[in-house]
Length: 217
Image (cartoon, rainbow, N blue to C red; front, side, top):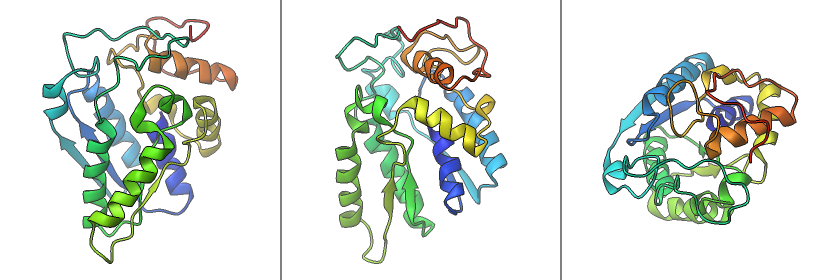
């Protein structure tokens, strides 16, 4: 949902889209890929690239990629980094995106991270993206100028749903669940905060859920 709204935001700002989808062994990679291809087609993307890697899965230490770890239910009171954190994932994914962007003379890489992400994931903090942009400037060709754009980095998921509604994002073609490919579980962090965001803007989430808790906790 966050990445989809970010893609629509980039299109609204006048960018031609080169869509990159990564499958790295996450539990719902097939469903995510199906959503990504649908959205790329609806957005009229100039190109769609799928990159399949398994190194993050083989590294493990995340309930998104490691079958020996259970995906936890949402716990908004916890101050611990959740088990769904994939060690340094965004640096891995952004490196692929920057390579793709430089090869196609793109001006920016858009990322869907937001404030509720970086409360739990260290590689979603504004400082991380600022540091990564500096690294991109140092590590690419002199004539390359690629901005790391994180349009919702200070916003909440509720803000993202509200903006997505304004942009006409087809939320039925997005997937957020950490556990299952259909129906969504409704109780993992990602499902719980997504459902709460839709409630906050007075909209019905179009996805099928095994459970629809009335609150994120």
